[in-house]
Every structure is written in C-alpha cells, then in structure tokens.
Image (cartoon, rainbow, N blue to C red; front, side, top):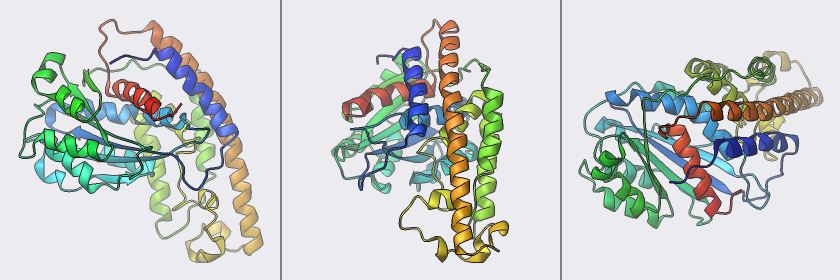
Amino acid sequence: MRLIPTLLLISSLGGAFAAETAARIAAPAERPLIQIAILLDDSGSMNGLINQARAHLWDVVNQLVATSRDGVRPQLQVALYHYGDTPALAQPLLPLSDDLDAVSQQLFAINGGGGTECCGLVIHNAVTQLAWSDRREDLKLIFIAGNEPFTQGAVDYRSACSEAIQKGIQVNTIHCGPAQAGLAGKWDDGARLADGSYACIDQDKVTPQITAPQDAQLAELNTRLNATYLAYGHQRVEMQVRQFDQDANALASAPAAASARIASKAGAAYRNGSWDLVDAMEDKKFELSAVDKEELPTELRVLDAGQLQEAVAKKGAERKAIQAEIAKLAAERAVFIAAEEQKLADASGTQTLGQAMRTTIAEQAGKKGFK
C-alpha cells in the first residue's frame, strides 16, 4: 500500500483547519456521508492496539474534517466494535453516530477480553446491525484490526466480506504482526474480497511524543471553548462531564492526542446539538422556546425569550472566534509536527494503526470524489 508523504498530508490538513473554520460551508439537504466502523481485537495481547486507537482517534477525525466533495463538507459517522470475547459481539459498543465524545468514551471503556477472535462474525454483525447508507456515492468503510487468523469462528470471512461489498462497504484489514503471518492468516484475502486495503502494523509501536510551541495555548483556548457550551436537557450535567472526561482521556493518552482533539473541537464534525444550545440553534427545526426552563443552565432560567435568544447567540459568536484561533494554531502546529516527524522517521517502515487508517482513508476517499 503506497504511503502518502507525512509532510504533504499534514500540511494539507493544517491549511484545511483554518479554511474550514473561518468559512463554514452551508450544508445542502443531503450532505456527502462518510461512515466508518472500527472493529478492534481486544484480547490481552492487543492492549497496544487499543492504546493506539485511543491516541490516534482525533488525528483520523481531523483528516476527515479536512475533506470535501464538490466544495461540501461531509457528515461523519463512526461505529465501534471490540471482539475477542464472543458474547461482546452481539451488539456494537457504539452504532454509527456523529457523537464523537461517545466514540472516545467507548474506546477508553474497553478493558480487554480473550477467547476466539471471530473476524467473520464481527464483520457480518457490523454489516447487518449498523444503519449503513444505501447511497452508492457515500464512503462506507470497515476497519478490522487484530492478530489471529482471519479464518476463526463459525461465520466464514469470505461470506461476510462478500455481503459487505454487496452493500458498497469496503473492508480494510489491519494485521498486527509480520506481513507473512498476515498473509498466512488470510487477512489480505479478506480485504481483496471486499475491495479494501491490507496493511500490517506494529501494535506495540510507541509514537515519539513531540511537544509543539502551540500546545500550551491550545490547552488554554480549549478551556475557554468549553465555557461556551450551554448544556440543556435532562442529561445536561452528564454530557458536560463527559466532554471534560474525554479531554482528560486524550491528554492522558498522549499530549499530541490532546492537541488533536482540541483541533477537532474547532471543526464542523464535532457537534453536540442534543445537549448544547449553541449547536442546537444551528438546526432550523430546533425551537429554543420549547425547552423546559428547568432544563436550561441555571443562569439562563431567569431570562425572557428575547434575552435567552440573545445570550445563546452571544455564546455562539464567542465560540466561533475561539474556534478560529484554534484553527490557526492547529494549522501552524500541524506544519511543525510534520517537520519534526520527518526528522524522526522510522527507517523500519512499520506503521501504527493511525497511520494505516489515514493512508487508506486518503486513497479510498479520493476514489469517491473527496478531496
């Protein structure tokens, strides 16, 4: 699989951060859709894989935020499965969702399992259980990563991959271990049957932590950004706590992951209209007057309808200004990180999960007309 030079990829993403936030494109009735299901082996030997998924989630999101088709930003939906413990395969950890904090929350909740790693079964379940788009022009991808033979389990991987591609879902396989072991275990065959890509990674590879000059200021801006959220609804407290928790999880995973998450929070894919008044107001169907006073932030309950509208609009303007600052710094940071990564390039050529996913997404999105 051809690797995209890091500097070119990151530089293009950096420029897109600023452009995307400075001038958001009004979405038509039907936006392009990108749907990705991530299937992770959670057996004991795959702790490194799960950690890589946690560390690189926001890098992948940022790459997708930087894409467009015919000048229109796509809607992003992510689903998550873990396999390696057969009972856990009955339902997805998270169905296809645009709630990126929920994706992060579920990733950090994976504790590991064990048993038989049934690739065919988890692919079949992802194909049949998730609400995939029926539009052929939408980008629909499955990424499955693990180290055991692809042939394990009662469901034949060949039939599972066949039913995937019949729905226009490409299956990309990521073998954790040597290339020859992946070939012997039929990981390449699974990708071939579903028009996907096959890659091998070192699941225990630790990416060098690069501190960028912009990191401290991004963290400060993130604190200000969080203060613009006006939580409403019966789960308003839980949702705001969850947002803070995922900030903390990203930081604990890697400082670079924290900065990548902050950049994502300045982009159009990070939306929380189900619990935040500012995001909710961007939906023309949302009626602010219909929200129960008792389910508003305490400081807003004493306001009349006009004052409430004005307060939400003021927070929205404040948020956009902060997001623009974040976008500018994120673009500068991306260029700095790319240059540093070039200096630290690993001569072995081994990839991480995030690198394999970003390369595959760039190639397959391009074939669907995304830039």
